[in-house]
Image 1: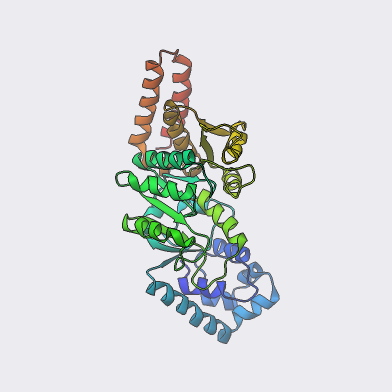
Image 2: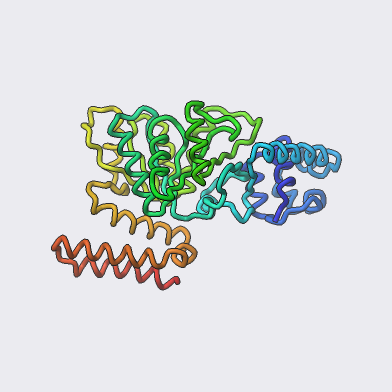
Length: 355
């Protein structure tokens, strides 16, 4: 595995872009200094002559290593751990996206990154009172079922998603931030960030201490929220909202998009994006309590498609329980279950043949 200091030194290398670095580390997961200096295949991956000359320059590399070690020290002083794409703790779901962060800065319970049962609860910064209640209730329900709630620590729906998760017994939540972890944004959520950490939650960012942030940092953050999750749930969003960035990322990453049915009329701006979403055929809409059972099965099926036997092996008993619960629900509703039973059996036979 490539050393952390080497990866950070490469990040600090002039004109070496993030995409080139990502491709380099994927191709050479055990990259060494000797590789940088002598390996022609590594030089081909670096592409640009100016970059190749820099990484072959021992004096230049030494300066970058000094800077990299200072980065490690500064983060350590702030209780922040640094993970790379090759770290064993790096989340498997996030690795699957087209552009995973090369480096993740983490504060709190990094063990949460190994969880596979994650859903993102997201939405507008200006929700209605119903939206606040719905986000809190939905996050609490999923956290009670063992899901980790992912959100962005923003004002509005994000805040209530995190709070709902913390209200569940042993509820856990991950806050994905657009800036560095030493400066909580927005500042009014500093108390919430502290509460997340006190309850064995986690703060993460791809931005390190001292690095600049801009509007684009928030959009880049959105791909991490969806990338960490099996499903993404926008609770409230206008037709034009940053929430749609995360929704679009979720679709690109082949994650499940689901939403609750709004109680308020479509004339309310905060609901209009959700009403539009409900018209899309690939969006799961929660209309009543019974839909949660179906939703859990959809999330399990999504996990199986993305992660295969690793997920099934870790969640076999839960998958069987959900299967039996859904059949029981159909029976209690007094519907003809023969066709439904066959469909369910086909789904779960595909799952369990991988165990």
